[in-house]
Image (cartoon, rainbow, N blue to C red; front, side, top):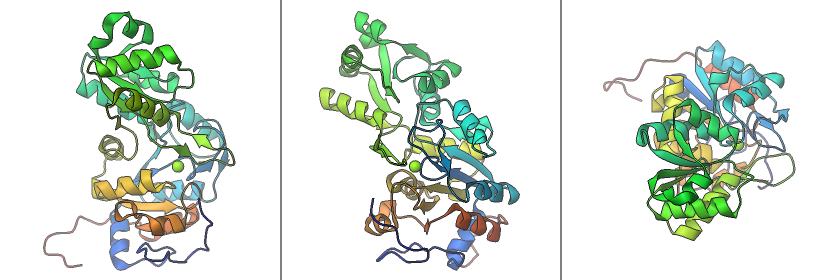
Length: 320
Ligand SMILES: [Mg+2]
């Protein structure tokens, strides 16, 4: 993390703009936004714990959510943490004063559960994680196998190993998972984020830590199902009812949010209130360059209000 600069300063060599005055093309794209994805940690709030354990709401968060509603758009709050269930996270957000329904919170565990149910119907899945992971899986009827079942000679029957936020795993579980992967199970993780934004402590991303370890042991790659994956982005589209180009992705992590927006044709906003700074964005590759860099969600609220009327999709005859 490097030092932040003042609002309105353009990063060297970075095309992203900030402030109320945006380029006509960007204004046009903002006006087309129908669904907004808000990251939670480092974007809506700052905490020392994974999402769902309180924290401090960042300035403008209430106003930004209200601006989305007032302009007839939909939103989802999408954390890349899978420690808590969506309903537990939504409860925390409401306790902090943010008006968010349970079904407006997404976690990568939800994406993983939906992916497993679709990709391996009736298949057995070994899961790393607590209630934040197992609840979405159980709700979608995914058959979960624990380490004892896997170790009891059934590893070959495991279709996939999904690694979420698990702080109680031990050697036996790693052995069972590694054997399952070597026997042919696909390896997935809810998140490969090395860290999450927090007040002070280094908030280590446990899921990616375990998944990388299993890859180290087995030589098999892991696939990410949380941000910035196509699966995660698809879930955002279906939750908000928006097309890819009608999605605005708002977050503090260039790899997660700006990268996801770039990869899938959405509009990406970097908030400088968490992991990455304006300087980081200037140094990022084109595949992680945000369309906008903002220092406060108050600025985003103003932009959503200013460019608030969703416009019809442009026709072929339309000129820029
Ligand atoms: Mg974040």
